[in-house]
Length: 79
Picture 1: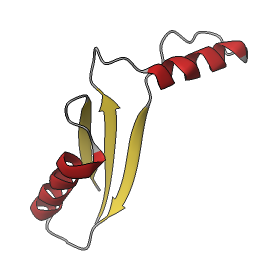
Picture 2: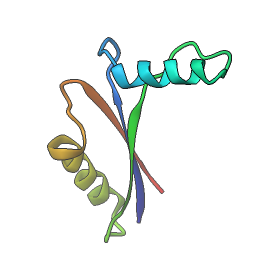
Picture 3: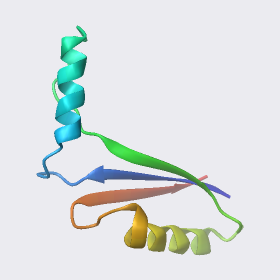
């Protein structure tokens, strides 16, 4: 089973890397950029066919390691 975990900063949390990317895009002449927020994407393969077990394992992984839940949100998608 394959899954994708997307981790993004919560609203209101400053994103200096996003601001740096935004500035770089503008300096490269990319027009129409209003705001950039950066995040992380994890593509994960699981050794289970049980969707419930996969979701529980991925939630535990996010809570323990993949996301800092104080400042980040995460979303789990199972394919």
